[in-house]
Amino acid sequence: MTDPLARWRAGAGTAVLLDGFHALKHALRFGAQVPVAVTTDRGAALALAEELAADVRDTLDELLTEVSAAAYASLVPRPHPTGVAALAARPSRAAGLRSLARTPRPAPVVVLDDPRNLGNAGAVIRLAAGFGVTGVVTTGTLDPWHPTVVRGGAGLHFATTVERLGADELPAGPLFALDPEGEDIRGVALPDDAVLAFGSERSGLSPEVRGRADRLLALPMRPQVSSYNLATSVAMTLYHWSATGGAATAPPAISS
Ligand SMILES: C[S@@+](CC[C@H](N)C(=O)[O-])C[C@H]1O[C@@H](n2cnc3c(N)ncnc32)[C@H](O)[C@@H]1O
Image (cartoon, rainbow, N blue to C red; front, side):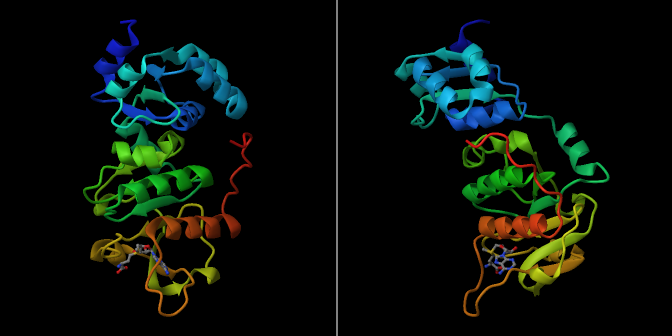
């Protein structure tokens, strides 16, 4: 099947939509299998690659097919300003579970306990990719591969492991649950095999995850402020891990 639109329609049901140039760039950098990629302007997309992503420029040159604006708009729910979109194969759950179970684990796993906001989940996956954590696990009903989460994650689902598990199936390792009532995180060094759990935007940690926690940790916060946003809490905690002896993330070779 050589027609890119036919390939797109054949794959759209099961594949992951990469919405925009940056999502495609990130996914390629982290080894995503991309069977089809389209653009409304090949010249502009390749110029962007030369400017921001020379490492994947040749791959993009091979992959990108120019389509009309109308054809592009028929493939994506919301046209992206870069006029680029692609489909990628979703990594297998078996591979994800193997990655979460490996020992010794070189970097923590982040658990989002029943998150509700798709944008928060995407932002956390982007953070996890940036800090090189082992994976992001969600409990509850939110699908961490929902297109809106993938959009928020900027294509970085492929740079870490992303799975939904039951609260009774969390990966092994010391469980640190983040809660404003916990002990001050600044006195605690987080080990690389930590499981770092964060509560739901609405109701905080579930009784199940709270009950399984080895320690409850609090981020410093002035009195009268009730809590931080979920994704910013993950950001501070991962920064704390990296700054207190956590496996340093290699400086990025590419700045864009
Ligand atoms: C928006 S907060 C949840 C607020 C919720 N109304 C509650 O009752 O906890 C989402 C999650 O971010 C984390 N969080 C927010 N502020 C925190 C803080 N100061 N210390 C530790 N964790 C915090 C916790 O894991 C919390 O469950």
